[in-house]
Image 1 (cartoon, helix red, strand yellow):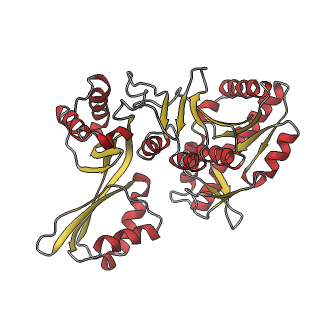
Image 2 (cartoon, one colour):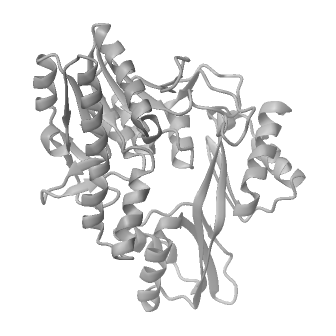
Image 3 (cartoon, helix red, strand yellow):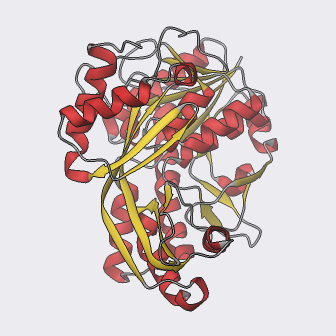
Length: 405
């Protein structure tokens, strides 16, 4: 079997954890499998590198920031190879250039465009354990482009898809996918399995256990994906095409604290207004999430939408620069927001889910600022200070009290 194993930053944060992960990798290798390993940077290395950059320049070039951040993964891969050598087994560390991971030229949040795994194949033929830097690719200019936070998951799944691996294991500091973040909700329940679609929604809505683009790739190429603990041998959560949990209305609750709300006030009530704004945002690579447009009155209307907090400053600058083109009176923005979402394939046939969620928030005396729905998710925007209490009340409503329709 060919197995791809990915270890996150918390799983290789120090020497003890690197040695523990190395032993797990070697155990898999000794079982007769070919092993490709993808690593993130150690612990808080990426955050430390960003802080270092901002000490030098508060607004560092995105290209140079990618050059700097990519060194974290290279460090952890070289250290892992050394740890495996010490155990007496062959291993080699490779970066994105050596592997041939091509990415589109968007610094900070690039997408993988192409994989060439010839070097990996040749090293596997030499019976080596191959260790690959996650989180990065090489763009058409020959520059390093990082794949966004959590991008090592996407590297691992992309390699598994390209090489048609038998299994892709994502090792993290929790032992699977839970109904809510177990570090916040002590009685959160671990899921034995979850569908690609449900996992994609949870990942996109703030659940940090998997990078959302890794789930997209896994679904597209039908990669067998398992999320499991790097600390224990507990069974993990299988992410697959269809989940058998038919009796469960929702699979989990996600919380995204990095959400900002922007409102454009006093816009002319003209046809094509939304197209003008959001096509413009799209051309400038700014992703927009929840959108609300007010009913026109006195020939003007307001439009509110959310962006990731990290994009707030760039978005405001862009809107202010193009104020005359867009045609609004003024902007209101608020970074003190959080997005709470419930996700589940069973919601499509159970219309009482929204009412149950809103009832739980009302019981907690929490106001809702915006609402967005789809067939398998309901998201609400709330004040950030209410976030943890909201998760507790909603989780209790669905997973402790039970919901009757």
